[in-house]
Length: 379
Image (cartoon, rainbow, N blue to C red; front, side, top):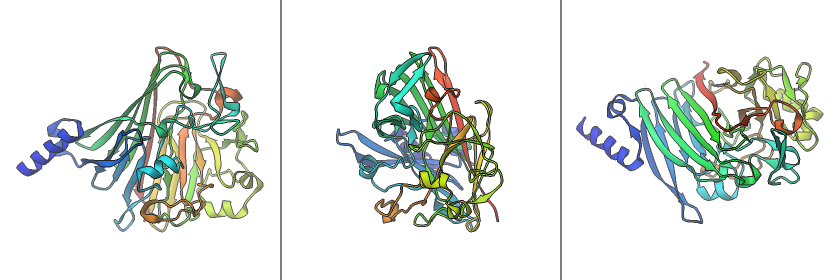
């Protein structure tokens, strides 16, 4: 016990964590940190490693990127179920949004503009003529302040960032906190909090690519997807979400019952040929509110199952359509099209332009959002 006590004290000293010693001694989790790399402006990037009894994840303070997430299969074998890179330089220069925090506004904003309380703002055209995922230096490309906390039943990485007025064209100084928490229930919880000193829009998400097989060289075609949704947003040919909801009934977008992804991809309907795969927003409820189930993703061979719960209206499902063998991921693994699938919970995309309800943070208001990634086993 004395060795453990002093090792924990030393770890707390290194990380600058806010920790109650009684919680640490009783906790099922340990937290480590290590040097991950250095940016061209000499900023040091740190990797934070959270070790639990049945779930382990690591993240870096660059982009808030989740670099690994290990959970057991039906035989108790731990495997990493998210795609990514091994080196900082790849995250900086070969951007695929692997594991990153996305913001200020996820998805595409048509014409690189946003109307906020009747006033239209011009945003950066980083996917000209449109704006994508917060711009060329979005939340995925900045260095976040980081601290860790350990409690009796979990551990958290608390990331904070000040997005300054005018960044990528967005108005207002936006104060953002994103908290990752792993717990003994085999959950990874993501919480978003924000406030602004001027009216602005905010629609963050988490962009991990999941492959529950743990084999990143394999496609996710053998995964089974179910969505708590009967409506989705059709797209223009430039992948811009339109403002009218459409029924999924009788379409390739109907995942209201568990559906093997291969069955959808093999049919290759026109709607998926236009986008090279799934890249659409499904609506789960009319407005933001209490935590509810949005999606279930399972992999029968490994027995792994992921249940996604969220306070948000729905989420974007993206099937890794633009991955290819030129993308060399972790452990020198060449990725291919559909090596992973993203479940990006959030608000209506393009809502500042298409008439759907938009998330505007006014002065004095606090934004809060929560998504839970809950892992389990089906034998």
